Image (cartoon, rainbow, N blue to C red):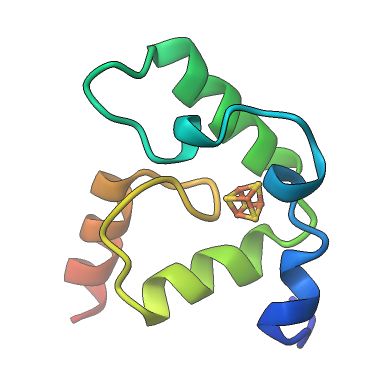
Length: 82
Ligand code: SF4
Protein backbone atom coordinates (compact mmCIF):
# COMPACT_ATOMS: atom_id res chain seq x y z
CA UNK A 1 0.00 0.00 0.00
CA UNK A 2 1.33 3.43 -0.86
CA UNK A 3 1.06 6.43 1.39
CA UNK A 4 -0.99 8.66 -0.87
CA UNK A 5 -3.12 11.30 0.78
CA UNK A 6 -6.88 10.77 0.47
CA UNK A 7 -7.07 13.61 -2.01
CA UNK A 8 -4.53 11.87 -4.26
CA UNK A 9 -5.77 8.31 -4.03
CA UNK A 10 -9.36 9.28 -4.71
CA UNK A 11 -8.22 10.62 -8.08
CA UNK A 12 -7.15 7.07 -8.97
CA UNK A 13 -10.38 5.47 -7.79
CA UNK A 14 -11.99 3.46 -10.55
CA UNK A 15 -15.46 4.32 -9.23
CA UNK A 16 -14.55 7.94 -9.99
CA UNK A 17 -12.74 7.46 -13.27
CA UNK A 18 -14.96 4.81 -14.89
CA UNK A 19 -18.61 5.15 -15.85
CA UNK A 20 -20.64 3.11 -13.39
CA UNK A 21 -23.88 3.77 -11.60
CA UNK A 22 -22.79 5.36 -8.30
CA UNK A 23 -25.89 3.93 -6.63
CA UNK A 24 -24.32 0.48 -7.02
CA UNK A 25 -21.82 1.50 -4.33
CA UNK A 26 -24.61 2.46 -1.95
CA UNK A 27 -27.13 -0.28 -2.63
CA UNK A 28 -30.69 0.07 -1.48
CA UNK A 29 -33.75 -2.09 -1.74
CA UNK A 30 -34.12 -1.30 -5.44
CA UNK A 31 -30.51 -2.00 -6.36
CA UNK A 32 -30.12 -5.11 -8.48
CA UNK A 33 -27.65 -7.79 -7.45
CA UNK A 34 -25.97 -7.43 -10.82
CA UNK A 35 -25.23 -3.77 -10.04
CA UNK A 36 -23.64 -4.69 -6.72
CA UNK A 37 -21.64 -7.44 -8.42
CA UNK A 38 -20.42 -4.90 -11.00
CA UNK A 39 -19.34 -2.55 -8.23
CA UNK A 40 -17.44 -5.30 -6.42
CA UNK A 41 -15.81 -6.39 -9.69
CA UNK A 42 -14.63 -2.82 -10.28
CA UNK A 43 -13.19 -2.69 -6.76
CA UNK A 44 -11.28 -5.89 -7.47
CA UNK A 45 -9.39 -4.06 -10.23
CA UNK A 46 -8.99 -0.77 -8.41
CA UNK A 47 -5.40 0.35 -7.77
CA UNK A 48 -6.37 2.10 -4.53
CA UNK A 49 -8.49 -0.64 -3.06
CA UNK A 50 -6.28 -0.93 0.02
CA UNK A 51 -6.43 2.78 0.79
CA UNK A 52 -10.16 2.79 0.24
CA UNK A 53 -10.77 -0.13 2.57
CA UNK A 54 -8.47 1.27 5.25
CA UNK A 55 -10.21 4.63 5.06
CA UNK A 56 -13.61 2.98 5.49
CA UNK A 57 -12.37 0.94 8.44
CA UNK A 58 -10.66 3.94 10.05
CA UNK A 59 -13.89 5.90 9.86
CA UNK A 60 -16.06 2.87 10.63
CA UNK A 61 -18.15 3.83 7.63
CA UNK A 62 -21.17 1.55 7.93
CA UNK A 63 -22.75 2.28 4.55
CA UNK A 64 -22.01 1.09 1.07
CA UNK A 65 -19.27 -0.72 -0.76
CA UNK A 66 -15.73 0.42 -0.01
CA UNK A 67 -12.47 -1.28 -0.84
CA UNK A 68 -14.22 -4.27 -2.33
CA UNK A 69 -16.18 -5.03 0.80
CA UNK A 70 -19.84 -4.89 1.68
CA UNK A 71 -21.25 -3.34 4.82
CA UNK A 72 -21.63 -6.77 6.37
CA UNK A 73 -18.05 -7.77 5.59
CA UNK A 74 -16.65 -4.61 7.18
CA UNK A 75 -18.81 -5.06 10.25
CA UNK A 76 -17.27 -8.52 10.72
CA UNK A 77 -13.77 -7.11 10.16
CA UNK A 78 -14.34 -4.39 12.77
CA UNK A 79 -15.81 -6.85 15.28
CA UNK A 80 -12.86 -9.19 14.81
CA UNK A 81 -10.39 -6.33 15.25
CA UNK A 82 -11.98 -5.13 18.51
S1 SF4 B 1 -11.94 0.09 -4.09
FE1 SF4 B 1 -13.98 0.32 -5.02
S2 SF4 B 1 -15.06 1.85 -3.79
FE2 SF4 B 1 -12.87 1.99 -3.33
S3 SF4 B 1 -12.07 3.57 -4.67
FE3 SF4 B 1 -11.78 1.62 -5.70
S4 SF4 B 1 -13.57 1.32 -6.99
FE4 SF4 B 1 -14.07 2.92 -5.51
